[in-house]
Image (cartoon, rainbow over all chains, first blue to last red; front, side):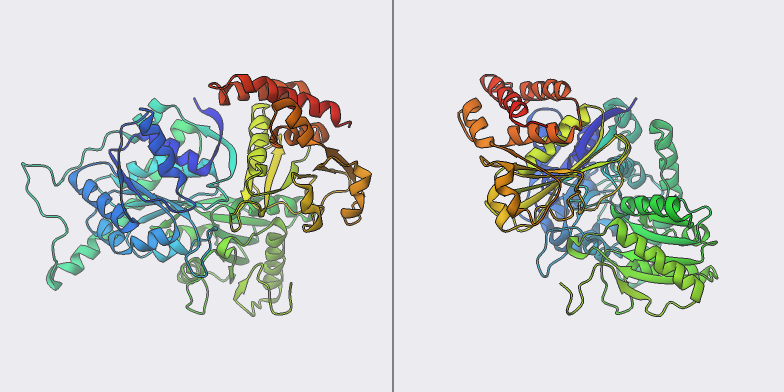
Length: 398
Length: 191
């Protein structure tokens, strides 16, 4: 039985953490994720949970401590944002290659510089090749739901990979919205106990973790990580199905919104998807134009074939990136979706937009303009500039 | 409530405009609504202008942008009228509520030709009389509830009392003062 509540995204994730009551949480504060360890510390101080909280001196240390705790066999998590994630860089790769099911509550924030505290995806997109599963949320509800699904995915013996549960800084992390919470006992039962097959403190099975791998072994180790990612696809869907049975809330690799009969589609990640949905309802009501949305939930592993299949009937696609990668040719989601469509033999016109950097707002009207531009592209079969911006001031604008 | 009601708050860092927006979300939630309450963060410092927002609806809200065409605007610090275009995008069918000892017609000239309704509430007077201290939050909250009609006044008072009882469980003596501030505001704001 769900409980009707209203919480900010940070409170929602902290609440899920309390319900799961993991073994160890090392953390270092950074805006906008600071509230998560803050709430967890309060729960611990109030005796509502007994997670061992480790105060560390940096994010480099929080991820190092998380790796140590997870290797020892403890269910482990941490939280961070932006430069905090950047400071974990080295350890992110270590956690993934050591196959440690650490969960990271990431509150997406722009990377410096210029220094900025607001939402974009440059932090997690920069870590997209680190070997972590990445799951993104549109709303506080999804941040909560995704966090509950994180450990069953990460700790599955066929996966054993760290998972990053991402939500948009301030927009969902500090925004209060309605949310349905699940009962403590249901969440505990859903997540289950962590019973690692191999762990450092097992005296019956002495082992080394993170040793040097000569060239003769390194490549196979990486191939193993890829296999874990491929296995994760099946597990993510199984866990989502089990979650739907408990809550009635359906999840997959992505959400298809009014996509069935759509001529024009937007592909996007995160909180702005909700704004796009409002634009879709408005356009369909006032003009009857068939517009739809594909909202990415799972970015790693990347569901390339499934995305191409979902977009097979559309005439034009706009892929919206909330981060730059300075290839000069577009953003990371744009590049990967375009490659997937090409490999699937898609004939749709594809365009990539950069939006929302450093918290730049995106509105219903912005989405309406994108759909107009898609319609125009499909009619003329001409994309012209396939790498554009939304909401960017040009010289002379105010 | 057929469409989503959108409210924009203007205040200064430290005055509690963000808290007031979150309180309005809270009390509307308790009245059974779908709600959003969120601040817009710039460089944070005491006294700097800040903006906070509410969406209140009978239906699920998915939009995650800021509010540019609000139905109502609340100004917690009348000094902001000189520097900020507080009525930008404000619906002429809606209203603006300003914390001020002045009469609405005295402030009209600062509102850049806004043609909708203007309300003022002397939150300082009410707060000092009811609480002995200046906390503009409770009067401004009651004022926007009165003006916007997002919920029934009695329902609002009941929910606020429950929430104060919870919030001030260790200082029950301040509950009555806060409730008085809400009631006095309802009397002062003639809608």
